[in-house]
Length: 431
Image (cartoon, rainbow, N blue to C red; front, side, top):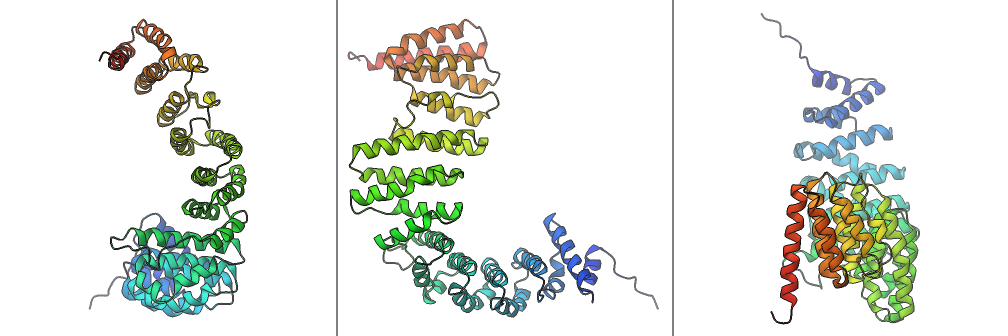
């Protein structure tokens, strides 16, 4: 009779430790399971063993088990149902962190079998006495709508969210707005969408006031959600447009670039309804410094800011008319940032700053990056077309570049001059 060799392997050892009688040993095993999961190892076979450790008073251990469940719920739909009782029990826990954790995890598991059990705990959490639980539950409604819209509508969750906009806690208001906005976008993208659909999020005058009150109190991402909602609001008259602009302007001072750009968007939209010229000039003047400040951010943020600035200048070229120098390229700027800066410099070019621009563009033509050199030379041609009075100076710069005898510089300069001549001839009255 042959003796079977004992099972070996990392997962077997983890399984043994997860079923240990010692609490610390079980917790350590869960940490090792999460570490393996993080580096891409398949530890889905340990699902039943990890699940046994779900009922615990140790918050850290509970978080780790919930994290594991989020990762493997889709691959183990039959076993996830075993966790439902613990989720429901945790949603009634005296600790608000545990209640919020339970409702958040149930919302992101995306397992069909769990969804139907989510409604009752979610109803309770939306009315919870703790604002942290309420704000977590608000976002859970948006996740549930993504999975089963009819469940959200039938259970009256949308009506509850609309009531929560009047919540006393600004973070709850911000998360409620974010949830309603997500649902509004999802509903409006449906082919059969109707404005009468209860999922739509119309912003009334009373909701507007609640949003403006919460704006200064919530976190940066809450502010972005509220500002995006304000951008959708249609003001009744010029007084209301002025009121919104005056309340939003202080957000220009925020350190987060997303908040600044969202505030600029709101001002640009509602400035259309402002009739007072002095206020419009004041708003435009206040917009410049925060936009310039964004250019000292990391390259990725800079690029987003530059793309937005480019769009703003198409609508209001006067916003940064005296700030061309801040868009001069630095030696360590990535190419994608330099290209955006070139486009903006040409937009800002005028008779008063064209000499500084041409001097800068000529300097760029001696750089080592061939693509950037070509785009810089092209920018000289664009400047010549844009400013008639500077055309001769642009031609002189191009001729100087041809004298360098650098092949790609000469090629681009000749092409630019030829295109410029064609454009000039085309604009002649006889043609």
